[in-house]
Length: 318
Ligand SMILES: [Mn+2]
Image (cartoon, rainbow, N blue to C red; front, side, top):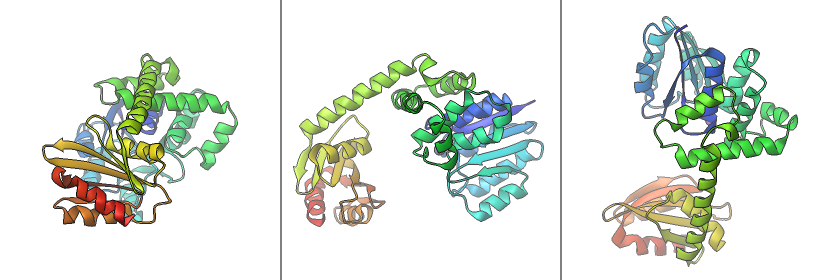
């Protein structure tokens, strides 16, 4: 049977649900991000007989194109879409109308839903993959995952899940590595049995520990916030570490990605009373930049020459 499994390449839940779909259907794996989703759907040929899509939400701006591709494939193929991201009732209706078997539940992670869908044909070891997806997507308190984890060795599950997440942190951008992980998981290897995974996880731990030290040494406190300029690390991570290292409610990390401009990531704890996204949006605009975001996670872009003003204005606001 000509069969394909299209899944999210980004994290353990995406790769785990893809691996379960491959184990159940024998399909060829296609890993995707959102920005190349339509392109990847186009790779599924007209004569495909089966397609499983997992951990990829359909509720985006390019839904019409998504639907058109699904309709093309579903003319011949059996299409199953397994997902846990928010999906509008209208999108769900249109997918079902196109003949898609939709498995959608926002309470469980995609790996758990994929396990549930193919449970009858999956071996015992598949349960660990489902639990790893739940742990790393912060959905291990869900009805199915909770029950499953309670019936096994909890520490074993937590370590396997975290080890794989860390290894992906270290190597997910490496050509072929996520594909290898999916293949080995679909062969029912545990994460620690996959060649290169334990070593990559330790490397990632070392990087995180070193970053923690660096943040303490190079960060600066100003009022209720702490800030730092970095050249190498994920700014989101740095801003979170600043909060812990300086015991403040707001962390600000800046990186000069483009000459003369800082890309800034801001994070806050529940102690911070202002809406970070709105506050930084106004400040950045005033300084000739732009920005926005959520209440506790935001970002902006400002000229390097005005960074001190940004810190001063923000510190006063909070
Ligand atoms: Mn997920």
